[in-house]
Image (tube, rainbow, N blue to C red; front, side, top):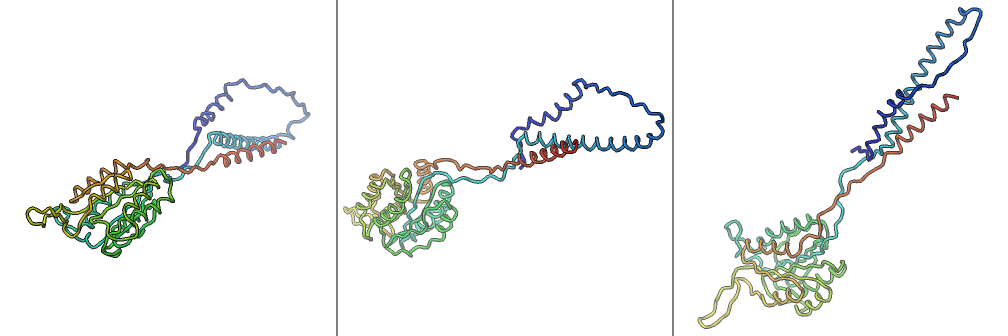
Length: 325
């Protein structure tokens, strides 16, 4: 889009003619030429008059064009391109998702129907990711082992797409919480220290891997990684005899004490999500705890065009000066 930084300069195009006619003209008296017979000069004078008159109009037109070009250059024309999004300094956040076999347990409700835990999680996490514009997100999946499924990236659409395509069971049937924490800490160490976040989502307890949760917590604290933990699944069901307090979750046993300890020692929060609605509230709460640092900024590239009218004005004025010689 063509723009002018100093559009008021075009007022000179009105001011210059006004000054031209307002200022008094300089008198130019010439002596008369006396000749014995004027008839010999009539045809030549008429032809010369036409030539001089036409030449004056061309010179006047070129002078007007040169003046317009000079005033246009003074108005500083520029071409503004389409807005370009600038990268923002946001948080570095990993989402660690449990994809063990227990996540196929259908004890969550979505639109008044039962769905699996992994389906409910994908449904709720999708809009959460879309709101993290400006952050760098990564995806870790874990079961018996922990794996970086998507490295930290600002391409949140890709993170969302790969999350929706993540199958259950490919990482094994157990739960390696310690290794998951250690892997996230290792990857976040490469990022600036200000905002290193991990959101851990699981329906089980630590029962696999090399690192214990306690060892992984120490690494996270030393690396300044804040961890929020989310326990997924239905409420505990009592399968014990009267007088005994043995509570299990359908399909898995959740060590909520361990998840609370991870969050507390790293400066995060522990959340329980027993259905889709409560899971949505969890992510709304996380958005308040970890707001996006700033709105994405845009830059409109600008290209100066001053040199073109200035070049045209220089050529026209140069020609007018040369033609007077």
